[in-house]
Length: 239
Image 1 (cartoon, rainbow, N blue to C red):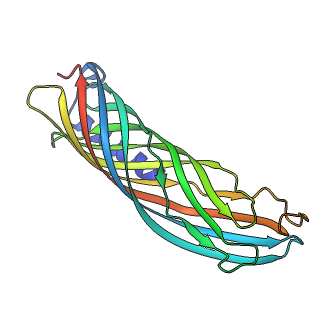
Image 2 (cartoon, rainbow, N blue to C red):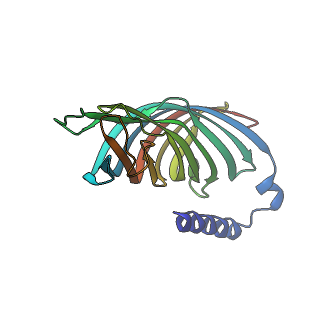
């Protein structure tokens, strides 16, 4: 992902240089854009769950991959620096929720039901308007989010909540409504999050009185998503 971002930046700067854009045009004329967006995403991930008994022996080792979809709202603000560059921040107040996964079917200790809420998904990004095609842009940035693990465990134990971060890359089109500051934005983006690991807080090999529950761990990887966005924007200081 980093190589893609660097490559796009080099390509953009090379194109701007070829058009001989003046320095005042590139960095002058500040503007401020605020937007409200409706998003529809498809997410995928792989997870490995290991369950140990109270003696530290692994009694279950299961790996699964899954895909789910969810819709949510977001809001963003951008500082436009000249004609080509904007610095943006996007916040998602809605939770992005996975389906509930059930394990330990028929276990004497009871079933485990686990789902995850991705809360406070925040993105900081650079948006670059492309020359030659009015309204077309690319954007790249970093993402951070908190994972609220919601569980109903047969043993009564709980998993620790964790946080993660990652990167995003997007392509979009901005269209203004006549000569006003109002506009519409259509965008597609890709997000990739770093792997995370969490457990039930019981040390491996520890003897407990909680239904002889031992150390349980979940490691998630390959967390990625594709998002389609429709946004309404208003730009202050539009030329």
